[in-house]
Structures are given as structure tokens and as C-alpha cells.
Length: 113
Length: 112
Image (cartoon, rainbow over all chains, first blue to last red):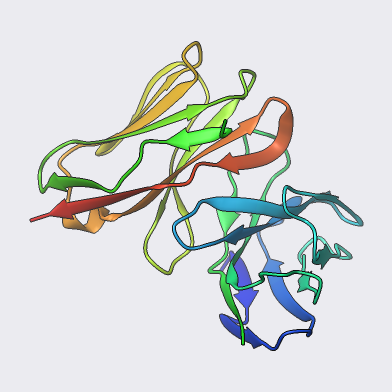
């Protein structure tokens, strides 16, 4: 059963803590992406990776870090430097290229206590 | 100026009517255009993609693209209450190769 999985579905973090969000895909897609969505707003790109061991900052990368050691996996770490981390985080993947459709995982809802 | 802008909502239409959703974009050399539907609390799912000027139809959905006017739209015919969701316009290519830029979304409500 192919698709994109994200875990956990809900995550609660205390201020000052780093947390890591998991994203795994078995679609054999080359590119993977992380987006953040705030209530009533569209998606904003945090980081993206078009090939293993390479990734680029998106529009709002400050306070976040990523790694791409395997084609199937693209974890996102929300660091304590991210001032307003409470949001809905979405991972997506696609084949490389501007015509290739991005497909989304189910998302992780992060709340800072 | 926002890079991708959608018509402000919420949009409310009666069941069976045509819902019209509009989107404009600023990057003139954009190549790919997508419409996603997002139900409350869920992740976006693709409805339509369009790459060439003109209309593209898929069931009750029609996407329209006019690159000269930098305008893309989505028409939903015979709207159903299950179509009630937020619709996101996304644009890729051009100067932001490989990246999608999303509009802020338009909330559609179809009432019986």
C-alpha cells in the first residue's frame, strides 16, 4: 500500500524543547517537502529536498532543520529557536520536475504548551 | 503583492449550482498549476492539474488557465454538500523551479 506516512499525528512540546517530526514515503519519489499551515492560511514551504543528501531552504526555514539520508525519509526538527511553532505540519513528495504533482501525508499537529 | 492570490471567501452556493474559484499569480514564467481540496483538519488532496492555456475537464470539475492574464480558475458543476472544503491554488515552475507556491485558500460551503 503506497503512500506517505507522518508521525506522530499530534505532538505537544514544552517551550525550549526540540522535537522531530517523521515523514516516510514508499512511492519511490525523488523530491520531498515540508510545509507549515497556520489557521486560515495557505501552506508555506519550510525545506525541500530533490535528491538524497541535499536539501534547500524554503521561505520560512529559520528555527527548523532537516536531513535526507535515505530516499524514503525526510525528518523535520523543530528547534527551540522557532518562536511560534504551533501549527499543522505537512510533508509532501513528488517525482522531480515542475510538472510533477506533490502528494501530501496526513500531517502532524504540533502544539507548544 | 502576494505571489499567488485567491478570491476572498467564504463562498457559499446552493446545492446543484456552479461554484467558481479564482486564482491569480505573479510569476509570469510559471509552468504548472494545481488545485487541491482540503477538508477541515485533513491534508490537501489533488483535484486538478493544468499546464496549457484553455480548459481541462474531469467529471464535475473544470480548470481554466490563461497565462497571458496570469489567471487560473476552477469550476465545480452540480455542487454537492460534500464539496464543502477549502480549495487551494498552487503554482510551480518558472523562477521557483520544483517549488509550489500556494494561495491562502478559499472556503467553499455548499448548502442543501
